Image 1: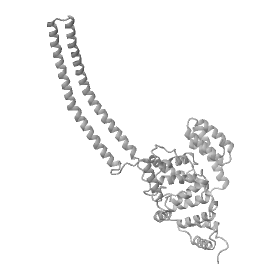
Image 2: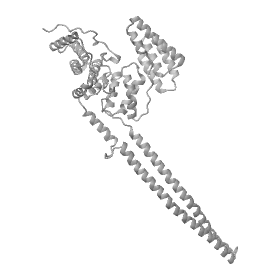
Image 3: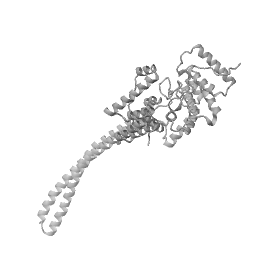
Image 4: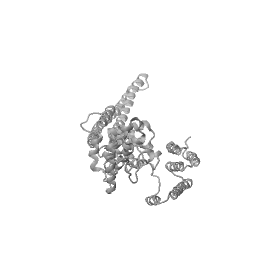
Length: 453
């Protein structure tokens, strides 16, 4: 006989929410367990070699030009001096003929002058010939050596960091190839089978929990459209490490709700799908991410998954600005921030951007967090308020980064102190008036605190 009610699981979190509306189950932000990265092994081999190649090519070419110019300048200097003397002596011979015609010089004087000038002319011509010979014997060996070094060095460098044997690949063709590879990538079910061995093993459940799961599965056989039961099934199958079963339950929820599926429903399904695939975003998960962005474009988790998809599909240039905004505008306690902080330098390098992530904000250590768990609600609230006051005092006395000011503004908004948060926003605008990037961080915190203009 089927049960009339669903079994009650201890500490069920099916109705709880986390930051930006995602389920607060243990599947928060997927990462490949084998690498600690949200990128599956081998899915994204980032090499920033193109810039290195062109830097070396430019340096070699510049050295070549300088050496050739130096050699030619030396030969030109010798030749130009002798050529100038020859022209002067030729002019002097013509001047002798004119002086003789005007009667300034006698025949004997003209003959003597011609003899001397001719002797000097021959000497200048000899020096010019020697200069040309020296140029031919010194410049060409230098040029030959430089050319050989250039060719050999270029070939060696290209063999190390280039792609010998491949034709030119214009940007349009490259982007088309990236899109084709993305469209043909591994599907969800295949990715789950490949990732199964890499996923972490869950803790051994007690028998009572397993009995409850058996009851729940039986209930859902008789009531397959029970949304509450499906939500419990998805959550607790994930706890048991049955991620494929959890994904199927989540997909059933979307199927039942259809166009009425909420951002929470979509995000819960995406979480399970990406985690079950070992951090890989499949085409099916990408479709759901697109739906999520269409109904909640400012959702932080949706933006995180959008950047993750682009990065895995060979578009770090598009992923980087999305993740940079999430990292810099926070909130810094968002579950995706540690992953972005770990990966964004590689994404920036692949996008051709030099980027230094902002320093992580200081927060309570593990001991403080453990102590907070044991406190009453009143004591925990008092501890949070004390931490906020400590941050405010430190910023007032020592100053801090835009991210720390944003942390204070956001915390005040959470505590309901909007008037104070607004005052801090105005002060921060003055402090960071010269930095557009810092002001963006401050304005983002103002929006979250509900005090934006």
